[in-house]
Length: 354
Image (cartoon, rainbow, N blue to C red):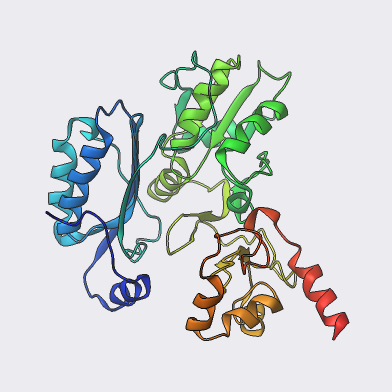
C-alpha cells in the first residue's frame, strides 16, 4: 500500500527544493462543489500528484476544494488533463503566481476539512451558491471611482498591512471567521450601497458575497479571481494598479510584489518595510515584519528571549519542548501570534533594563 503522506524532515525537503534544477509553476485554484467522498478523492489525488512531484497545500471538504500548488513544468499537461478528468474540477479556473517563482512549496499536503474556508456560519438557511456579481479588473477599477462605493478587504490584518486597494476597509481580524461579523457591523445601515470585496484568490469573497446578500445587502460585488487574477489582467491590459504594495501569499514566498509602494513599517524599529518573517525560535514562530537591519541585529527573532532560545543546540530546544502542549501555558513561545505584541516597545524596555 502506498504511503499517502510525506514523512521526511522539513529541513531535508527544503534543501532538496533549493538544489533541484527543474522548472515549476506556482498556481492556485478553488471551486465550491458538492464532493460525495472527500477522503477517497484526497487519497486519489495524493497518489497521482506525488508521483508527478507536485507540492502544495490543498484542502478538500464536502463543499469543495481550495488548492495552492507547485507543479513541475514537465508534468504540467498531465496535471491539467488529470484535473479536467475529475468531474468536480473540470475546467476549473487556474490562477498563476505573479512572480512566477516555482519554489513556493517543499512538500505535498492534502487535508480533508469540515470546510475549505472556516467561516463560523451556522445558519441552515444560508446558501453559499447565491454569490454576488463578479467584476474583472477593468470593472473593478471603474467601480472604485465611485465615491459612494464601499470597498472591503476580506483578508486578515497581516495581509492588508502590506498591500491593499486604496480606501478599503481592512478588518482588524486574524481569521475569516472573525472578519465576517466585523464587516457586517461596519456595513450596518448601508445595505443599499454598492459593496466591492476582494481577497487573495477569490475563495473568501465567493462565500462572503453570498453571506452578505443573505444578510440583506442589495448590490454585492467581488473581484473575480482575487488579487492574483487582478495582477495578471492589469499587466496584460496595461491598466493602472489600484492595488498597492504586496499580495500576501500562504507559501514559502510569503508575498508577491504588485507595486513598489511600501505601506508598512518594521515592527521593531518603524523603518519603512514590508518583509514578513517568522521568528527563528521554532517554538514561537511569530509572523511579523522585520527590516534587514533588525533581522541581523535580532538574529531573525522577535524578542531577546527568543534569541536566547533559538541559539540553544537543537537537542536542548527539543528537550525543553518535550511533553508540553504547543502554545500551552508552558510553551517556549514568548508570545502567541494573536496577541500581536508591540515589539518596538518590548525592545525599548529591554534596553532600558540593561
